Each structure stands twice: as structure tokens, then as C-alpha cells.
Amino acid sequence: MKTEEKLPGSCGHGFDTDNSIIARPGNQTGKRCLAGVLLIVLQTMLAACTTHYIAGYSSVEFSADGQHIAAGTSQSVVILNTDTYVTEQVLTMIPANGKKKKKKDTRYGNGDTLVFMGNERLASTGFGGLVSIWDVYTGELQATIAADNEARIGVSVAWSETSGLLTVGTRNGEIYVYELDGDDLFPLGKLRGHRSMVLDMVFGSRGRYMASTAQSESVLVWDMEAMKLFAQIKGSNGTIDLELVGDSNTLIAVGTDIKRWDFMTQEDAGKLRDPSMAGQQAMMTGTVLLYAYSLVSVGYAGPVPGGVSASCRRTIAVSPDGSLLVDLQPGPFKEKISVIDIENDKIIQQLESNNLSCDAAFSPDGQQLLIAANNTMYIYDTKTWRRTEIVTW
Image (cartoon, rainbow, N blue to C red; front, side, top):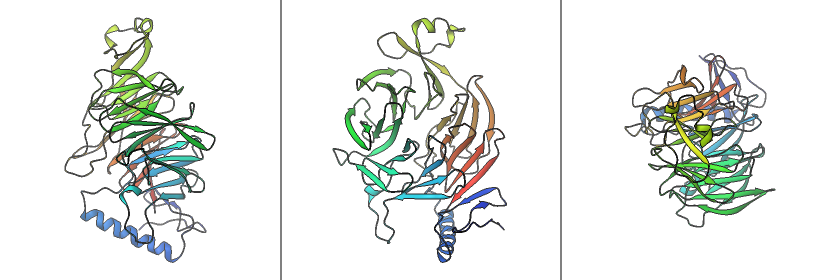
């Protein structure tokens, strides 16, 4: 039997005997608490009977100051305080009065479908438009940006704090670009180069360049100042997730394997200790070249077979200092979560996994790893790799 320490004004918050943190909205009391318990029981029973449907978290993110966590499902985004793990806001467009939900009011995509814009705003795919902007502290919807074509659906987002640019990848391959000026977002245009769903995008540390990947296509590198294609990385077909290594000029791409792409001049490439390490050069002009290095952890990279979850694919997260890479590999029988020492190209830890995991994020100080799983989240201490479960009601 689980026991909890109750907090005034809430259904309860504390550590269970199984080392899970129960995080619930702070304004629920009395009968609402009982209703919440009954709802969770009902959801658990339904989940046991409906193994082909996963209604859990598909995307997680830390705010820049590390004070908040955002976790998204297909219907809502919860915002938690990292000091107490109390749910402060629930962002949703789904009617609470039992009315039938509209498809356009849900969220789309998996992985990087939400992003903090500084510490006060959150951008999410869907919720009535191509992308929606929310106030982190009040939970109010600040803006809904509609596409110029109703058939355009946002499935991925990226934000550059340096340049103030927000990009939205769509299901048809276009990337919409917006610039934040004060409290207003202004459209800058669209990037056209992909022909299929844009799975992920990531900005360089200075905001000048952005890399993007789409289904079964090469990774493209964009010059965001010129708003045009800068490079196409050959041999990167099948890339489904991208991450930047700290403040360096290194890009990690994951597909059936993991590759490290370093931006370097031809002169720098000639100084490699082992010239055979240099991989295929990207298709580009000028003096900047790209070289690939193969990392460890080659394995299953597609969606989980059998219809368990068509949206959870292999994904990675890189620590802020660029020393560690976490590789989430969903598999048909058992999931693998590997922690890789990037510098030494070595797996240093295999994390326990007894739940389908869809996304991961490091805290800004690198001391915690957050993993989104089916109906729950896990926090790992990156020094001890001790796991704590966060259960949101």
C-alpha cells in the first residue's frame, strides 16, 4: 500500500514508498481528489485492455532556468514546478464539459513538439493552429498561429534564444519561420527543401544555422539569415532525431545508427589525428566542410511494431556540457536506454526501462535527466542514475 505526505490545498504531494513523486494540481481538494483517484483507476483498467493505444507523454522539455518542466500528450501539456513537482498549469483546448473534441484542437507529432521560449512562454504544435503560444505562469493562450493552408499541420518546433527565431516543421515538408519581437511573432517566410514530414529541427548555438530532418530524406542545413539552404548532408537518409552538442559546432544525428557531424574548415580536417575518421563530406560550397564520425549504439530505430505506438521512435538527448548522450531505443520486446560517453565513444550506463519511452531532456545544469513514458515521467540523477517516478494527476 502506498503512503503519501499530504500538503495543504492539494490532493497530496510527496514520495511514495516505491520512490515515485506524486504531482497533482494544487487546487484539487475533497471530492475532486476522489474523482481523480477513480479516474486513474479507470484509465489503468482501460490501458490494460487496450494495449495498442498509448495516451502517455510524447514530449518533455526543461525551461531555460530549470524552474519548470513541460510534458505533452496528444491532448494537453502539463507544466510542473521542479522544486515541488506540483502541476501548476494544464494547457489544453479539449472541452471539459463533455463536448466532442475537434481534431484541430489536439497536438501533433512526437519528440520536439513543444519548446520553452525563454522562461515565460511555451510554444506547442496544434491546439487550434499550426503552433500555439502559452503563458507558462498563467496558463493562458497568448496566440494561435494559423497556417496559410488548412492542410498544413505543425508536427515539430524549434527555438533559438540567440536569434529569437521560432520554426515550425509541417507534415508536408515546409518549415515556417517566425521572429519574436517584444510580445509579437512576425512571419519571415517558409523554407522549402523537404518533401515529407519534418521530424526534427535544431539551431546552432549562435542561431545563424539550423539543421532539419524529414522522413527518409537527407539532413538539410539552413542559413537562417539568408533564409536559404546552406548544405545537404550526404549519407544521412533515415535520420529521425537531431541534437546539438553543447556550444560546439557538432551535430548528432540518429537513425539506424548514431553519427556525429563536426563543422570544420578543410585545414582543420587535415589535422585530424586519424585521417580515416573523416567521413563523407556534405554537399556545400565555401570553406566549411562537414565530416562524420560513427558512434556506438547501433540498433533498432523504427517505430515499435504491432501497433503499440506508431509515434515513439528512437530519440536522443545530449547533456548541456556535451559529455553525455542518452539513446532511447524502443524495441519489439525490450526497450534500451543507453548513456554514452561522447568523448570516449563508450556506453557507460544502461538504464532500467519497464515502460515505453518517447522523449528525453537534460536539465540546464545537467544534473537531471527527464524521460517521457506511457502515462508517467521519470527523473534520473545523472551522478547516481537513481530513478524517481513523477506521476501527474
